[in-house]
Amino acid sequence: MRSGARGTGPYRGTGPYGGTGPYRRTVLGGAAALLLACAGLAGCGLKSGSPMVDDVVPGRLGVGQPLKGASLTVTSKNFSENIILGEMIGLIFKAAGAEVLDRTNLPGSISAREAIINGDADAMYEYTGTAWITYLGHQKPIINGEKQWAAVRDADRRNGVTWLPKSTLNNTYALGINRANNRKYRLRTLSDVAALAKRNPSAVTICVENEFASRDDGLPGMQKAYGMHLPAANIKKMDAGIIYTQVSKGGSCLLGEVFTTDGRIKALHLETLADDRHFFPIYDAAPALHTPTYKKYPVIAKLLDPLSKRLNTSVARELNGKVDVAGEDPHLVAKDWLIKEGFIREG
Image 1: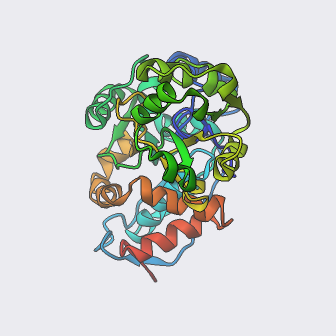
Image 2: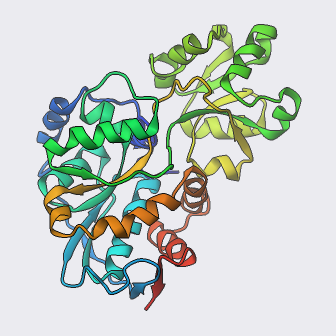
């Protein structure tokens, strides 16, 4: 589904951590490990891109084309959500008068991160949890989203990265349940799940990926945080894509590990349960800029702040679903949404 996903969320292949989501839990142990891994790539962060040729003009953003004469490069990781966000930045820059080189869809977190640090790219959307844990090497997340963003912003200055205000697009882990089953159990939070597991242990079956099943920041840690004690027979391990369909069918498992911004949640009519004890890290998306670029063009903040204010988890689910479920092109999904929101207009 997502290209390079999950890492798609927090830790994923497609996520902040890598997989497809912000990038999960293939966490690398801090900046030193990242640089070592990057050294194994041919020119980490370097990738030939293509000019954005869209005929777009200012809408609510970019009036007066304050970036006219600028030549800017946008990048992203290689999963749908991050590609969409990278394309949005590029289209807004284009409408504001810049010549834009599109270097989105770089493999994994490392190459995109290094492109920003080295100046091979000027802007991307990054995830606060990924930066705090993976890049900056902290073991424990900060449970307050604003405080985590501020801590990342301050710490990353030394790396030549400027963070603009974050969105409320939080690509993190959650447990999902289908609506039919939830009409019976009326679960709203993970605390509700813990109570059900205590009251009726056989009722709580859960489908998870192998990695999530074994990590302290996955299922074992979640059970400890919520006082759950699930029998081993109630935990079923499978690939991420299968989890969504199994939860949707409601047969193999009552609950499943999902990512909060995944388009399949809406498409398969799933509900997500609130992490009321704030166990899972926050992976809010925020623009991360090459600092010399921001110093040269500080107007970028005025261009991207309104976009970030509009982005949230529900918007991400909708847009991700267009790509991962309906098969639409991420660039066109980004462009159509920006036009619908009035941020830019067709030329």
